[in-house]
Image (cartoon, rainbow, N blue to C red; front, side, top):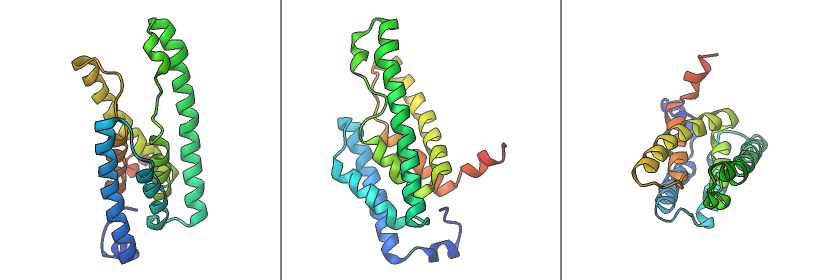
Length: 177
């Protein structure tokens, strides 16, 4: 939901406004945890997931459907990319350290599902696309500067979510087709 004016603000109850504020604070905390530890506490992910159902504009069934579609798609994508990294890329580069690498962390999927609940399927894919572009540039920087291969993805997911939520960038992409 893009907050455009007074009529959109009236759709949010005081409870939803407080919960959305706590949701945003939780996203910041998750981002900081991921940057520092490259892991996040499950209770913060659970709060993000369950609170998203109270702040979405979609009904419960549509919200659940979006969460399952988004998280299912990214579980499959995670499997495929991880398989590529661990089996093909590690053999091609003869780098044994890649055999333990994964594409996404365990905390990324529940957070992506909570974004699906709030944004819907299409807008969440746009948010993740934006996240991946920004993360790619950061990964290239880290690889060249510090020779690191693992980056925290949650801060970039949060950035993409905020861009899509507040600026509704999916409308720009819809104009291209």
